[in-house]
Image 1 (cartoon, rainbow, N blue to C red):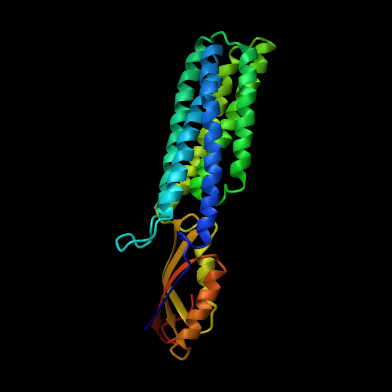
Image 2: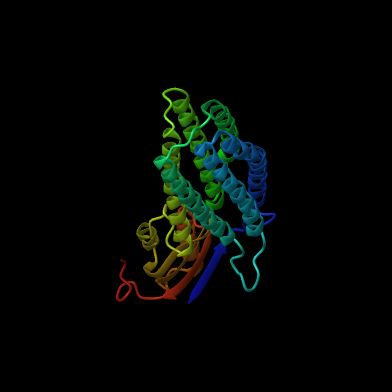
Length: 305
């Protein structure tokens, strides 16, 4: 009976440390931009009477919280494992993504409630100042998107922060569109309608993020990986009779784990067999591998498949 365990370290000082520091700097720069303009949009929304501006400011406030949470999660995820937390703190990133998704749902709900009330009695809105403030918000949001674009696929936590920025950018575009509609034809109802459209788009983004975070927490197989294809690839290795108790799950973004039992022909040296299995598994970009090898008879009771 044999056993193999292989993994790559992504902790502080390892390959992932510089990447996380780079992400934290970009998140910090985006956070400063959001803080600087959030107050402007709140004051502008109150002055102009625009719900679109206020909803954009509210979403910007959630951006500030999301970015701060993402930075904390990146820091916590770099902490080394302990005897009681053998996988470390990678799941902090997933929990942050889950909180960000919940915050997106809350913001969308508040905007929808207020928009429906305003549709029944559209208030007067100062279209000119609203348009100028919304345009400034768009510039700030585009700058934030540019900062986060290069790191948005790094992990689910950063992606959650990026989705907040996308929603905020849509909010600025909606505010600009409603400002033009108010200045031109005088359609005051365009302001709450734009807010409803923005809220729906935010809900779609939040739902996708929530599904991905829950899939990780429920330890489902990574979306990009086909467990059946992986099992077939291992079965094709000479000396492998069968594979059972195959489990593939995500510990944290970019860190997949695998454990399985392999029934093998005793005539095949276990060292060579384990090397071949680990080589095949590595092609599926799985970084944490545990393999239990059991002797068997491929010709009798260990038929492949």
